[in-house]
Length: 404
Image (cartoon, rainbow, N blue to C red; front, side, top):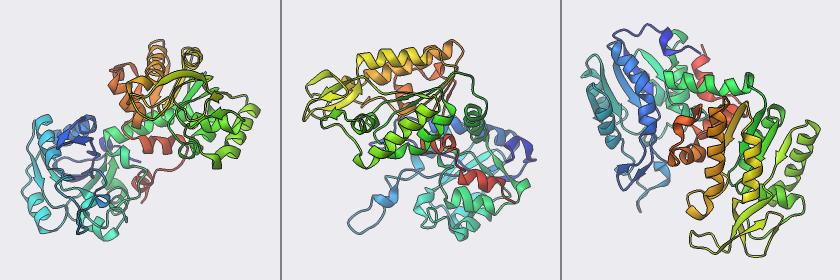
């Protein structure tokens, strides 16, 4: 896979897949981190007097239609994104309300050196999620070179990430600076980690993290399990977890993971106690309970003080820390302390010389919420993509960049 630095792009017309899938609320961007993350690549192209066409998706418009089955396009339009991008870049930025066709071609023809054109949401095109070669051919006709800088979508086999890349020859396509950085950081922890290695795996479901758990057993010295998935492990060993979230179908797998970890001398840490509530609500009644003896009709929504203390002792001496998934329902203040304290322990370990990789998604959101971003070694922009990479699986968008 080539880097953008390896291509002769001076004065060329370049089509770039970026990840501008930013969170929105009431028509307002609530976090523009993903837009900002693409700026170094866009400035690199502007410095080479390129004419730049940008492709991105926003949300899941196909799952949000009106009574007639039409996509609510205004809600998922990239027009607001283009306005924010224009504020961040000292170069002309225009927006095209179509993503293909004569209007997209006309807008491309008007580009001048060091200017940018953002086409409308790629997911408005029916062939995007189908990895349509025909759709990709329409986009290829607009440019001479292809750059993928959208790490957050690298695990998706879509037309703008795979089929489009496949239509360009190897010397006409490359990874942008962000994508290249994400790949380097991910493989750094897989191939050259500093010991001891601590993996912190949270979230609600074991089923979402099977591949990561199995990979970490081979890589890590310690695995910390938090979040809702911990109760599947506890119940699989005969613990009483009340109404806590669990996956009975994964009891046997949980026991196999524990046995395999024991055989590999990998220590798995499951929370000894939990903050439990009588209902899933920020105003619920709460108490601290041992995680194996949660009373009927109560549910574990965060790790407890003993678990926090144990986890901190594991994290602080680490050489490499991989974090994917919160310790509880951190969006609700009564259940945020576990995630807060684990994040601060990671930050402290990083200050002592550890390498910390925050695997995107909710973990990245928690770090930003706690204003700890500058105390982590790397915060990924792609939760699902980084999870796939850490599992050791190929990323379709990367494979497409490598293909001839």
